[in-house]
Each structure stands twice: as C-alpha cells, then as structure tokens.
Image 1 (spheres, rainbow, N blue to C red):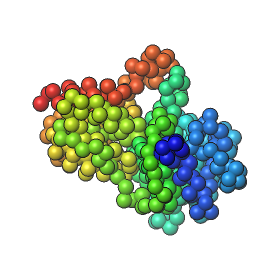
Image 2: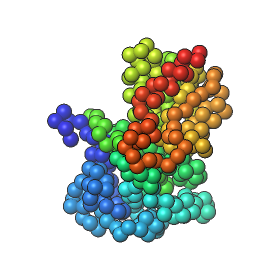
Image 3: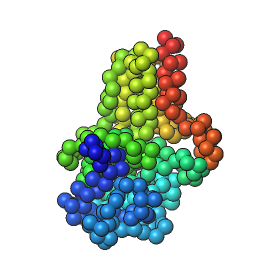
Image 4: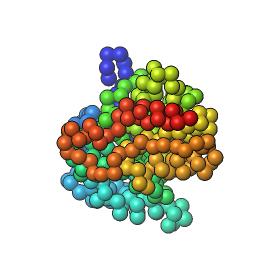
Length: 328
C-alpha cells in the first residue's frame, strides 16, 4: 500500500485471498509458483507464512494435476482456488475445466457442483513470445456452466475474486499483470453475490461508447481521457463479466451515443469483441456500423519493436474513435 493509502491491483487480489482464507476454512489455494513473486507478482505475498503451506499449496509443474485435484476437492465440499501463472499453459487443464468443472451440475441435476475458482493470469510483453502472451478469455466465455470474470480495477480484482469463490459455481477469474500498477482507495471487503454483477459505466459520455474487459477496459479509459481534450466525449463500459454476458448496459449506451467501439485483448476472428457486437445488434442497440480494436491475427512476436506494433494502445483506440466519429 502506498503512502497515500491506496491499494494496487495485485495487492487487492492478495486482500481477497486473505479475507477468504481467514473467514472460510473450506478455502485453499493451489497452483504453480504461489510462493514466488516471480510467478504471481505481489498478489499472494506472505499468504503461505500467514495461513500455512497446507492451505497455500505450491505444486509441481502439472496444470492438469493441480486443476483436477482442486475440482475433486470442490466436489467434497472445499472451495479451492487454482492459480495458473500463465493462461497459456492452463490449456493443459482444459479437459478438467470444460468437461468436468463446467458439466457436473448439469449432468447430475444440480445435486452437486464443484465450487472451484480457476485463476488464470494474462502475462505478456517483455519479449516473452507467442507461448507466454495469450489472452484466451473468449475460449472460456464460450462454455456453458462456467462463469468468467475479468476485473479491470483494484476494487474488482478483490471483490470479484471473493464473489467468485463464494458463488458456489465453477468460475474462471482472469487477471492481467499489465494492470498490477493500477491503484485506488479501497474500503473493507463486503461480499456481494456474483450473480448480481455485470457491465458498468466507468465514464459517462455522449459521442461514442467504448467497451472492453480487463486491460482493454483500462485502455478505453485512457483513450477517453485523451479524446476529452479533443472535444470528444466517450462513454466507457467495463464489461467485467463475460459469462453469462448481459449486453443491456452496452446496448443502452450505444443507443444513446449512436456509435460503438469494442476493444479486446484477443484476436478478432470468433473473438469476444464479435460476441459483444452481435449481442448489442440483436438487442437493437446499434444505429450505425460498429468497430472493434483487437490484436493482429498472428501469434505474439518476441521482438520488442514488433511488440510495440502488435499490442493496441490508448492511441490505437483513440485513432479508431476519431475515424468512427468522423464517419458521422
């Protein structure tokens, strides 16, 4: 925590773990590198010392094994949180997530459901290359029976994790290392139902609607700040919950502003930006053709120079808005 009393995004995640481990004895954390800041930054600092390594469990390198063990424990009444320091490699556990965790409640008539939370960390840039830089949220948002959340603020980083763990459902919680520097003043933890959460307006505006989740929401906020200096008032909608996705707030905003730009940290083909636009269109919230800003349809480069061209920035978003507003 800074001298100003603000809490960073990573620190807020740590607060969520502290609250859950202190107040819910059925909760434990399990995954790779959970004792190491190299893997999880400052999001789990000191948890193993405070709560014991029997509740903050560092595992060998087997995404499949630790995820399967957590799902099994959840079926026995525990509320485990599985930590995957890189979302890329949790693909080795997709069978456990998609064919087990997401299916049990539906296959057995709601008699049992694994209350497991799977924390997948997006960690890209820094010349890490194609296998260490992927944002695969759209894959999991496609799966029925699996809740998917992507916090963009420190408050949501804490509170959506608490809500997810206490929801009783399998939850994919996706945080982003590029957001760990965000800071804000937080009050005490006040658990709230995950079912009540959804998209929210972060910044009001009248000229264009910008929508994104996770780091993309932050880019929208940065772009809106830039555009305000040019006389363009952008309304920013933070999606927050990708599955189940409720397009109402975005559709109403786009209907007011008359223009929609969706920013997504994934690829365009079959991506989540396309899902947002389709849902908004079906709801009748579009008065003119929308646009989207996504990654180029290619694996992430390892060159720093190429990375600067590959990843969207606030200026990328601002330029797209200028083109969209200028087309009126």
